[in-house]
Image (tube, helix red, strand yellow):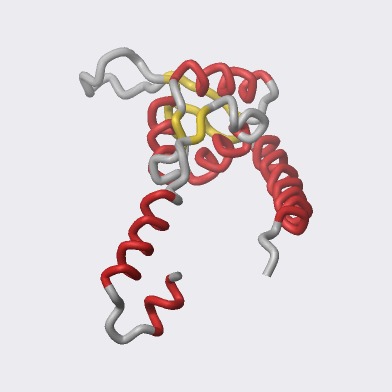
Length: 141
């Protein structure tokens, strides 16, 4: 459909209507925490690889990078952060900035060297998974 629109010098109203329908109705639905089970640890580690952050900042980063498709709640993020901390993949420390009146103290999470190694393993697994499954469900030409 898009190819047809690009090749057409003056698309008809019907063509534009069809394109609008396809684009409007093909938007992905939001992805909730249950659908991401097993992958959220990797996503959180990837966010923390770029910079240390507290839980709400991590949620915000995931929302921005997911372009609003990820529907996550604090009740989803914090238990995962606690598991990652227990596994020594992240290290949490209370924010020492007392000059700001941002509300309650925040726990800032940093990825550890062990967490970086784990993220590398998870990325390799993800690439293998996407490649394998992608070949099987690829749209026929």
